[in-house]
Each structure stands twice: as C-alpha cells, then as structure tokens.
Image (cartoon, rainbow, N blue to C red):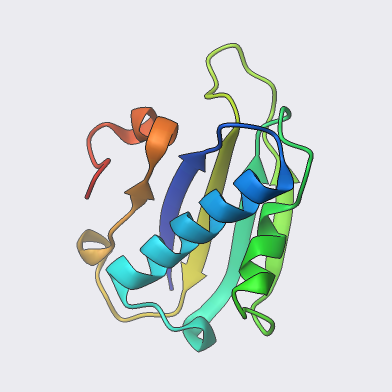
Length: 119
C-alpha cells in the first residue's frame, strides 16, 4: 500500500467551489498515478476550519466512488496554515515504489510542497 498526497485551495467557502476543486484534485491524483477506484483502500479528506459549506468527500461520492471508504476531518487552525485548503490522502494498493508516486498540489496549496508542486 502507498499513500498518494494532494492538496488544493478554493476561492470561496461555497459548495460549488469545494466540489469543483476537490473533484479536480482527486481526478488529477488518480490520472497521474493510474489509480482505479477498486484498488483504493481508503481516502482521507481534510479541510481547514474556514471551509464548512460542504464535505470534500461528498465530491468523491459524486464522482462515482460509491464503494471506496471515505473519511473527512478538519485541520487545526494554525497561523502558518494555508487558507481555504483541502488535503487528500489516498491509501492505494499498488506494487509501485515510493519514488514512483506522483503527489499533486494545485492552486494556492502549491506552497505546501514547493519541491514537488506541478509534478
């Protein structure tokens, strides 16, 4: 099993933005790593305290991930944190090595991992 990390930000605390950016992120993570939903052990979603208009995990359900175990949580409030940020951790059953995993950081979340953002 490998962990595939990703994060993104939204412009506003509204359901549409949360769903659009979460879908964009999860689709990019799956596409870049050739992840099939049946190979996913679980997905953990977190969001910063300033996002409460929707559950990011609900966007994955709308994408068709009905059989995938999804879990949502809230990040701690931190002065150094990125505002309106959604993070995703896909626990993926794969034979790929750690160095083959492509982590995805989009929009304002690119600052979280400048070393790999855009990869």
